[in-house]
Image: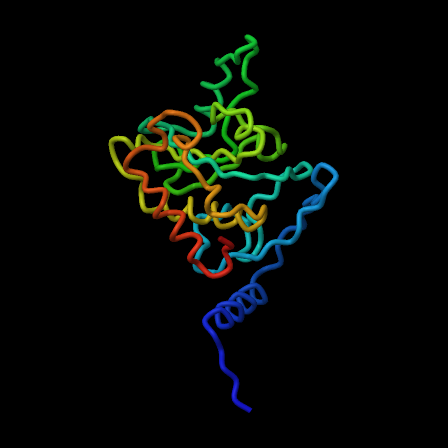
Amino acid sequence: MSVILTRSSVLFLLNVAFVANAAPPASTTCCKQTFGHRVAAAPVPSVSTFFALPDGANVGSFAWPPSHAEHSWRYLVIHHSATNNGSVRSIHNDHRQRMDSAGNYWLGIGYHFVIGNGNGMEDGEIEATFRWKKQIHGAHSGSTVHNANGIGICLIGNFQNSAPTSNQLKAVRTLIGQLSNRYHIPSRLVIGHNAVKPTDCPGKYFRLQDVVRDTFSKDGVNS
């Protein structure tokens, strides 16, 4: 009997072989309970979509498990920092000086993830913030609905002046792929900040449509 191996089958077998030969991962516990509901297990992006994983992360696993019960996220909202450099710490310090409409100081950085450009963070480095780890609302979109239900992703750089680095583009595709699979977020709900309110963010040189198309055309990423 002949056996026909598809591209997806080959990638799956390669992924299994990689994991089998890798050192055992550190023991981690990720609570799947989310506001009275459970997050269904989501397909894993193909091996070719993984870039810039944090130290200790394994190919085939979710790279940024939160420390609290998971929220049912509905959107991915993409931003640029509109600065030439920056980091989670610098943005956190800046945002802590801001006040909301009621006169209360912000808790800190408004985004859930930041992707570095080599100036303040490593180029393509993905860092989760306290909002992601604690699974709390963002402060990034200017929309109550999108702050409450949207994962805010900020790339360091001013994309009105220049394009993201190639490492940043690889990293944001990885992040979008993993998050969209885990929370079943369709491609139409991966949006720029300018889809929520009048703004240039994430910048004219950030080609979000191309990033979304490339991410969702990969095997295993639901559209």
